[in-house]
Length: 87
Image (cartoon, one colour):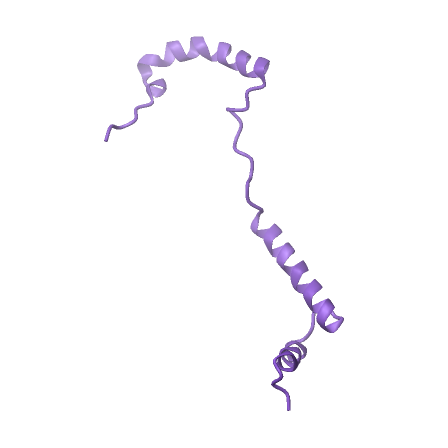
């Protein structure tokens, strides 16, 4: 397998890079090229995921027990009743 060598970082190319950089920058501005911009976020942050999961949890329990944050005992009683485990 061949190695990839970035010749733009070679000291011998510094003058060429310096001469061409303004033209490239002008072209990027003129065309609206977005190649130099970082990639947009494609996934939600951990905080956004946690917030969404908490809201789902609260909606579910609000529908089941009419409270968005039941105690452990209340949730256990609901599950036991749902599975017919109560005498």
